[in-house]
Length: 62
Image (cartoon, rainbow, N blue to C red):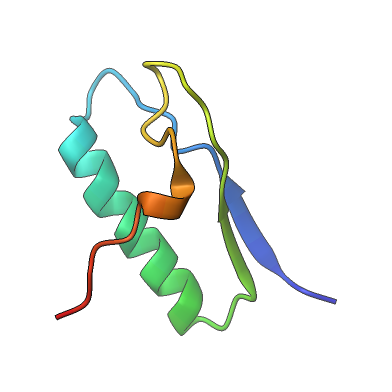
């Protein structure tokens, strides 16, 4: 059995897209540190969701 988290990275009126992205990356990092098997991000092409293509979400590593 795998344990994970799924999100569509929805946007709220009181947070900027930049801050939501930072929060999303922090959430995924914490999930990894806690040993979750999956952190899934759904794909949506609407303005009220942050991510339209999850495959390109992650920043490059130095």
